[in-house]
Length: 205
Image (cartoon, rainbow, N blue to C red):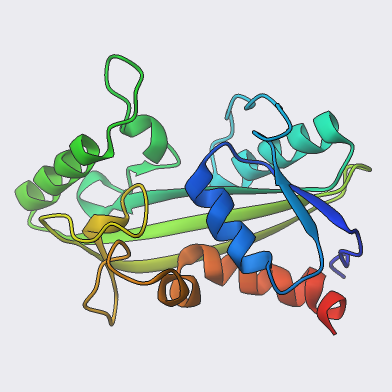
């Protein structure tokens, strides 16, 4: 049986403001005080895992060890069929230029060119959530949403690769959707629904 979350505080193990904002929005219905690893001055651990789940667990345990509080980590990425699922877990690093700064406009253009050259616009987002407690217990939940890579980028409400991804069955990119609309269908929302049902449902009722 999944462990129920009955704590009043939770650390979001991320230095990505976009992710922190989305996760905070999704947790708003619950009476939990949320802070981020960045706000606590916790360092970002090296992501040495080979899967989204492994990297999420690494980040969650690092924040738990550094804060003494339960922590929730998200590891997510964008994949394109034209590159056999890359950049995947390396989606953030894929956007880094020689100066170490992440340039998603450049990265999206590289993925567009690869998809165009391959004649395949299939793409998908994957998210793994790791909820960790100070005693070492961890619960993992995963979500995925498929769609198409489009060009040129559209919208400015999302972050990362959102402006070039149209989820299956929709016409707007993640970058064009309102936060509420994206939260209802995203890879992160799918993983969150699984986590809420397993670990938080009693907390809200």
